[in-house]
Length: 309
Image (tube, rainbow, N blue to C red; front, top):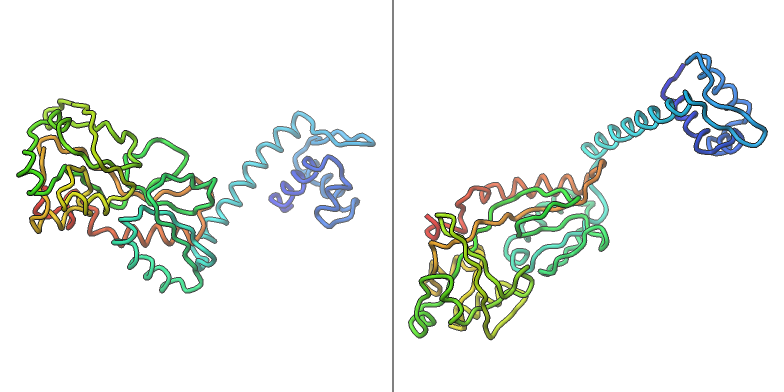
């Protein structure tokens, strides 16, 4: 007896509730379905279904067998999908969301390499810093720069992201350099609109002492590159990732301040919905992204050279 097919047949019958409906769904005659059911019951040595003129109902043994059979069939399906996902050539459209600044500077080469390797793929990339709901908005993947909260999404870390407090030499010469986070109350701060706490900045020094400071300023923006340009032009103080502000620091256009109160690094991660069956296109992109950003995966990478040592 083909036990696996017998399980599929039996589950179809239970789900349908009638032999005739199950037979139609399986494109078999009612007699053939009844005969296979009888063989299964004989093989198991017990009745699985109580038969009436209108409906079939599982016996106690039939319910237990149905529940176990469902789990086995789902596991078989999952195993097949895993193999298919690993061996099938990615095709279709990959819909990705990423922060604007990071996307501009660091995703172009990765996307080109992905499309060159998988020419049957199309890429639909949306760049903005707004937090999106992957499932509700239909994205396959999202790149996030944050300390991630627990969720049903899978997160794959690509690299660390160090944040530093900075200002231009001109601003510091004119307004003085803050020596303690509480001094920021007397300064123009450039605010990132999509921060969880736009006007409340948290700090912690190497001894574990914490401070929460209310800040304000004449500019609130939803993009890090714009804030960086405003900072270089003397508009105020900002907390920015080194991949945005690093070059300006190395060129003397910006200076790190409050270095003893440096924020813990965040992660640059790829997020995708939790699923038993990860599609070939998503699996291929995640694997390629991890390899592409591997040189940046260390705690001090090329973004941070001569800044954080």
